[in-house]
Image (cartoon, rainbow, N blue to C red; front, top):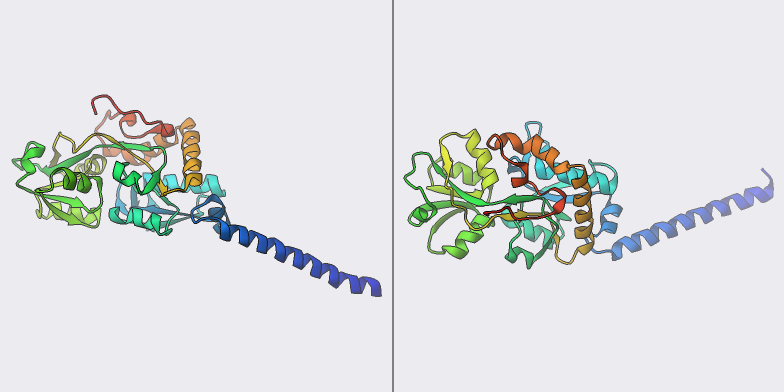
Length: 292
């Protein structure tokens, strides 16, 4: 190497390093200015952070190997794959019904995929995407219970999970009814099994699944309120991520992706012959079922 080259090479290398430093600094500055939960922040972090349930099969639960699985959980993995190129680039944060909204508001998660029903009250504090599921809330009672109709629960103890649609509906419509509240869905179901209450009110899809695995219970036919959509949720004002999820749901609808998840996790939990369209909302296109 000539003397001139020996002198110029270190200078050239320093120039490259300086250029890289400036590029990294610019990237860092851009990311720092991006709001939490934005697409830019998620891509810079190279990870999608999603709030999920760990005790609500078939939607979000932990299997025997300790892995997060379920309808909602697998949908989150697909979101990570399509946004970041790898379904493993997702971090699951376990939420309870009452903590879903606070976790969004405090930026602990980018997205909630934890079976959250769309209600006017929740729409005031979070932004929902288009729906992916539909649900009605019902009450589960022991087979030998004398209770035949919802109104007969007015003098009984009704178990609910704090922050669920059932909790909110009963508190608003029947404030004088006695509610026994638990933070976790698993705790509520165990309380029902232990006879600590006369009924358990929850999303009917969860009750169908649990009753099939635990004979000796039946659902009261009258729902608590109308059928409603379930949808992913983002922090209030995060229209960028909301719009991305809506576009993604529409695209997944073309390949009937939710039907695949339904077949994998939900179908065998329901009565034979159940129409999948009574449970899933493919493509995000909500249309209320007749008679709901």
